[in-house]
Length: 218
Image (spheres, rainbow, N blue to C red):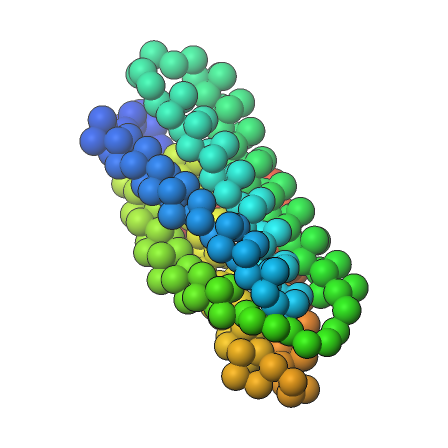
């Protein structure tokens, strides 16, 4: 197969482009309630993991919104200027990388500075985390399949983002589950703090990788 016929240099089929746009839109719609529900939970609980999760979800939602808009713009017609498309794709991926780094650093500060004490009701955040593990894992496999079919910078960044989101939600779920079962125990305190630290470090490392343009493992 010649170079011009390779997957990286073959224009995506219309159906594939529509699938990518629909998947990004579904990501946006399903991610939208997260910050709201977790934010409401903050009025009922005092978990540092829950506060950090609110910051993360808000930043990621904005990054997904930017990616969706740019994907639609760059795929509205086949004659779109390649140089401009490349610049916009870099902008979209930069927004994803920055969102992950900012949310990771914010979570680290929350974990280290948030006062300890009664954690309150963490059930809303726990429910969102459980749903997040399921939906984000599905989106990870969906984006990976789309990107493998026709490699695209925006979709590749979403592969990295949703891999991180799945692992982060798993960590948040475990941490909040321990807090919900035994809120006054030493285990709850340490799971809450350690959970936030692990999540924040993973987000920062992944975000830096995206900002540096590291190839996403498909």
